[in-house]
Length: 336
Image 1 (cartoon, rainbow, N blue to C red):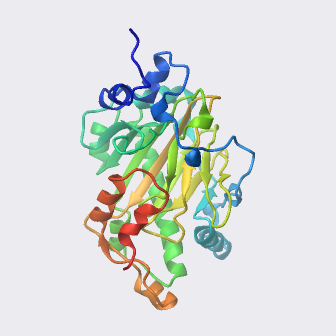
Image 2 (image 1 turned 90 degrees about the vertical axis):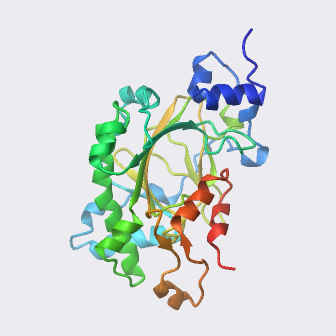
Image 3 (image 1 turned 60 degrees about the vertical axis):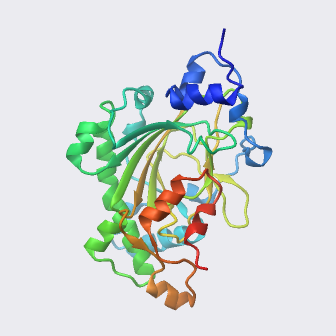
């Protein structure tokens, strides 16, 4: 007799505990969305209406060191302050060639550096997110080449290495905007935690019922995202409607996290029935032992400290212990 995937316990065991993931449901011949994946009406993403946001216009970071430095820096600061998302040009997207997609979910190395899973915190979610992933923590090159999944370790490591100089340069631009010059040691501490995810969103028979990733803001400094051509990333501007950041060939999406804070915007991902989607984010964040809090220069400028100083390990533990719920994770660090 076929398993009853409408029963949450049966589905949870198959998808999460046994590691078959959402892809396993699709491969088993499932043709409709099981109830445990059906989102409340308030969380569903309407059929795409073509609305896009201003982040569609890319910034050319290659011009930051030349005579256009002031203008490029202004574009970065403005994007970080207003939307918290922007796109950068002049990068290769070889990481997402179609023939590589299927291997991201197979033969995951049994290592503390690699985690394979479905959804975000499925044990606590009212409805499970329609996403599988492999998450790879970076410690050093040797351990990455030893423990990361064989099929993608070299190209993923190359993507990470090529992105870090860009991340640091963007952080420098944003810090200079508020009158802060970071010493190298401090910079390395603020982006000392580095993680590469391979996100896989299987084709969904009823995308109007599900979400790929729920409403949230990222916890770290900056996220670098490589999208494939399918799209589905939505961001919510202040006092505005959800709008899509469409994929652009050769572009990376950059978004500000809670730690950097300029504008850590809510974002989410819709599912699709036109094909499976792959995205590869690099998350950069402080080292767990780093204390994070308002910069004195910003407090002096604004006349108020909106957040308290916290140990980043504590903020990270809180973030990963709760389901996605908009920007609620920031409450942990808000000043009393």
